[in-house]
Image (cartoon, rainbow, N blue to C red):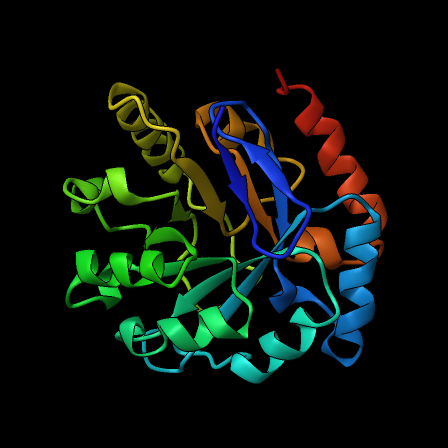
Length: 238
């Protein structure tokens, strides 16, 4: 049995098993008490956290960067899934690796040389995720899928939180799941955008196993929200 191991953390994920993970997106957290928010979700049983990095060019918004990641890395044992919504991310792979990223996600649309950037991440000792915007077809993965640890399918157009799930993405998740199975791979399917308690079942049933949640996690009572997500996840655990 092969394992994904998040460096410097006591987190093991067996590949090939249907282990569904909730990845709270700290973009929706209260930044005035970010350390407390991370501790709350960790105490609630979360193992991974999703960190959006936006440059104001690839997407309209600007978010946190290297100093914030480095500072929270010192305080958290969570697996850091860092989603780079930036142009030409190859310029910063080593910097984000050094800051404490465990998984580095890069947009296919933002890379001039996708294969080269994938291997730059691998050579930095990190897990690789390729991210696809809603309208980007799956065939951009034709010659790189075997090199990936995960694929993140955006289920909203990236750049802003609080958007509604795009219904056509359910079919896209299902098609990717079929492709991964046909190739005999253990690549994880991650989804991000508009995922809430009332629609998370449909993305799981389509094949997603890493679920990014923003406002659905951090609004009102994060610990209780996480508990409700895990109740649903248990319906699908093998």
